Length: 138
Image 1 (cartoon, rainbow, N blue to C red):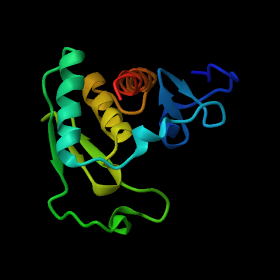
Image 2: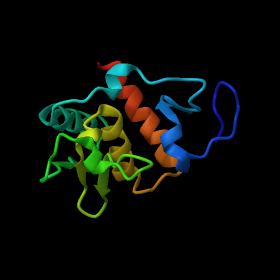
Image 3: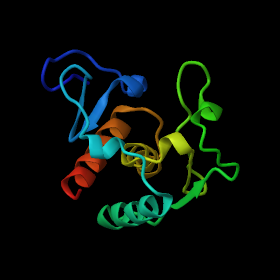
Image 4: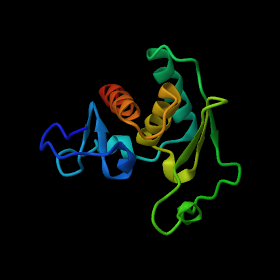
């Protein structure tokens, strides 16, 4: 997979360094619309999940928020990255942690459930398509 602007080889497994928006971009060639990165109320994310699943012909997914919710995101920091969310493929559920209450994170996890894949090329293209769909409706 290559960045559509500069052609650099990109690895979907390095997803934290990439931008998914219609296509998969290196971070030097494209940036997210800030609205995709804003922290959103959990009920709003549930509504978005329902809309995305419906538009994609996917069965609904169940969203959960961390039962031990703490507004301090340091709880979810491991010294290198934040734990934003987790997808449970078997039960089609997503656990969103407070730092991940964003549309980008929701689309990232939905792409895992829709493709039943980890950070592969198919997952990356699906994530990029979902984010572009959401961005067009903001």
